[in-house]
Image 1: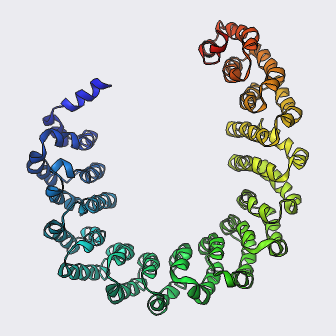
Image 2 (image 1 turned 120 degrees about the horizontal axis):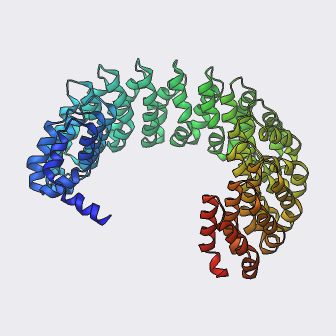
Image 3 (image 1 turned 90 degrees about the vertical axis):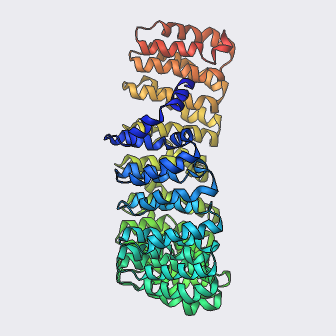
Length: 592
């Protein structure tokens, strides 16, 4: 490996530069990725005078090469001589910030933002700010969109005259003829507002926000919503109602569902930004409307925020608002026609129980949980089951247990294996909440059935599930309930099921302890060393290595070692290999 490194450092620079001109894209890409090697070999002065001009002149390449170049240049400061010369990196990055491919432009802007912090205030005004102006007044929309991402990084560190120019350029881009530019400006409006002085936020940013929020393109309007949330955090409470809320109210009722979706998606952030009074007067009715929206995507986004919205309501009126305004909407969503809406609601509705307390949960929420446990959509039932711990804290799970069982059984036998996998993962949690008696009576058989599922991922998850159950219920329970059933599978005609027995023994040996492993499990493993299927035999060798540390040394010496020696001379290559691995493995330290 050291030889390869030294070869790499001695790799002729001329060849690397030739590769930059090569017709093969992969060679050019490899060469770009080694730019730092070239720069180190050339030294800082030749990098500035030869390499960077060469790169600037040859920016007509495949997008993936340009993307790699834009990324590399962001880390080039020390290779051109440190912050004093960092402005030398601006010409190639300026060219990259104007190319047609969006990902290349974005990476160039990211690198420009990164190196802007390494400019001194003087260099920022002399070199960086003119670059931003050139991009902002470029003929092609590509350069103007890139400029939008650079205003906020240079604004705080320039003089007040230059600040005024920057604000003017940003205003111009917000009313650009090209929708893509207005979209870029809208996406950076909140970020730009954060670095402006408060007076300019009120005088400049609010008018730009209002204009972008009523743009003819919905793709611009929806980005203005996000900016509105950022602006709301900057303004004093008394200005919010007059300056921001009319526009946000309008966005919540926008004719485009995408804009309403964005409002729903950002609702919790907006709620935190505007404070309790505006939340009570303005946001509660707006949230109700979003929960009743005619578009399913909007209802789903709003449903996702139900718990968070309720948690952030002012404490003195929280319960009243939820019971009067939010719960009626939630009740309607439980029987919504769209499964995504019901699924979104099911993932958060259980959280309301901790907010509303025991009595309200039993009276109002419990019927909704029970209805969702019987829903035709498996995702809805699964989301309810996966959040049971919230309800368990408030009312105990017994209230739900009768409806829970049919839902669990249906999910456990669902045709989609991913649904079966998800319910297995929640089984230890359910077992802990339902208790050992209920589990043994109702769910034990399900757990055993998963061990012979036709999908390997299910059998594997079922094995881990057994181990977690033993950790919860103890070794004695395992000995009486689980171990006999697992060992019974050792005689199954299907070799995959016999292998599952070995996997279960591997998982259970540690949690069950030495006595149960030696007395009950080891004899079965040793007997399986005579299996006709080679896959089973080599898994016996692996199992013996795995359970070795649990067994005492005399048992290893008298019972395990002879079987492994026999397997080590097996006709099958794999069986031999794993047997020898086990013999030389860690557990044989005990028996050698």
